[in-house]
Amino acid sequence: MEQFDALIKKDDSGRLTIVEVPFDARTVFNKPKGTIYVSGTINNIAYRSKLLSRGGGKFIMVLDKAMQKSIGFDGQAMTANITMSAEDLQPVRDVPEKPADITCGMDVLTAIKTRQSIRKFSSKPVSQDMVNTVLYAGMCAPTAKNKRPYHFIVVRDRHMLSVLARHNSNAAMLESASGAIVVCGDKNREGLKEFLYADCAAAAQNMLLSIHGLGLGGVWCGVASNSDWRELLIEQLTLPNKLEPVSVIGFGWPDEGKELNSRWDTAMVHYEKW
Image 1 (tube, rainbow, N blue to C red):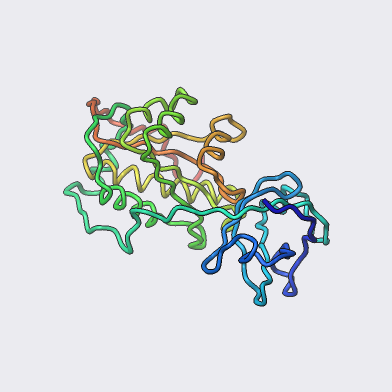
Image 2 (cartoon, rainbow, N blue to C red; image 1 turned 90 degrees about the horizontal axis):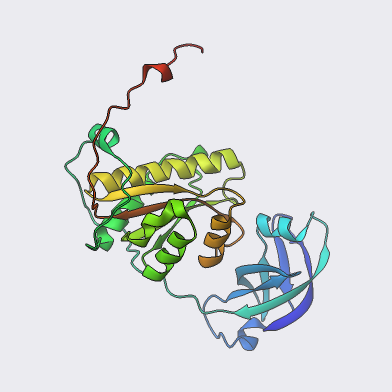
């Protein structure tokens, strides 16, 4: 691990907030080629990022808005104590160039009217092609100004699912789920929280409907702000500061049946004004 003091400042364009790394990162971290991913602390605030080469052995690191806020950067140059280590990120898996062309026989209105939350799942595995189809449905949701400020973290590891289930009684069903999709909002893409939550909610609804249409079962678990579960998600999934966990969708083959009741309620309908 390298430790140094460096100036945090705006770059020449005035758009980016950067740290100039005071050493040749390729030599120090023994990374002769490829992107250098790093992690450490800035004034004891944890970060994960990547270095950008400026040629001649010079590198910079860009700080996103969330990190700037965390360290109290107000646009004026400041000196910070930084620790930095290189890390080897696992390659992205199971993410094809495009999802498989899977369809279902359920029309959209039937899917909307008959979808219910499923909290009991069988041990039958869900194929990755089906998971990718669900993810693609989420990516087709409308967003404010088409910013698409979401990231989806797919959790299939049984130990991780168990950890998430045991720390939130309302998410206990994750213990038996085939997997979970953690819907996160990118605060750098969408600065308004109202739009961030709305965009992520639209994506979550699309995924829940596609799960039901495929014959699977799904359930939506909310992530309350300032909750211990939110902090657990951030820690266990190593979420960067820019990502806000908004909801968790558990999925699998259903192991329960539910009676379908009409949800039509005239008291909820108003015309022109209240």
